[in-house]
Image 1 (cartoon, rainbow, N blue to C red):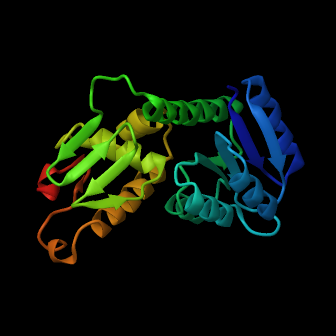
Image 2 (image 1 turned 90 degrees about the vertical axis):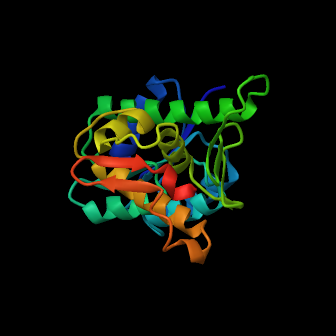
Amino acid sequence: MTDSILIVEDDQDIAELIKVNMQDLGLEVTHCDNGEDAIKQGLENDFSLLMLDINLPGCSGLEVCRKVREVKPEQAILMLTARTSEIDRVVGLELGADDYMAKPFSVRELQARIHALLRRVHLLKNNKQETTETDTGIVCHGQLMINKRTHEVVLRDQSLDLTSTEFDLLCFMAQHPSQVFSRTQLLDKVWGYQHSGYEHTVNSHINRLRNKLVAGQPDSTHKVFPNIIQTVFGVGYKFSPEGVV
């Protein structure tokens, strides 16, 4: 089955450049140039990936990301931002975008990002459809249970609503408890690429994942248990099994 991508970009020259290169990769491409149409298309159709420009007529790409993510938490989303607009990149990631590209960008990097995101989409679908695997596909640490087959996470009997990237990040770190990973290593292992200047991608996802993990704990435990995902200053992050005893 051919992967499909929705390009949401009001600059016709940029949209055409992306469209041509995505078609060269064998992708089925749909294009729209405003936020309202993007929300409608994103909710009514099953796209492998949404590529959203932030500055759009009508509602912004950030609003499109928020509304689509509310209904489709596992939808792969790539944001396009101006290189000088750091706040937009941070907000986009906080709203649930899986990754971002800063304009202007190289075609080779764009293709690498698309390949990485689609590879994760395929892995997610394969994990959900696999029924003959002898391994249970479950990772457990104390009161945290991660089911790789069903993409479910349960913490202290409470189900957590994670995006596909948040799930992949938590699952990877939980499979390597107490091991410290730099942001560059996490970009490579979870996102599937290494590019300097994209550390915000990791930082924002770590922060959002922490918030959801904290929300999954009873109030009485907030002051007792340490962070499940801990910062090792000057090095990176690690999964702490002690946080879910």
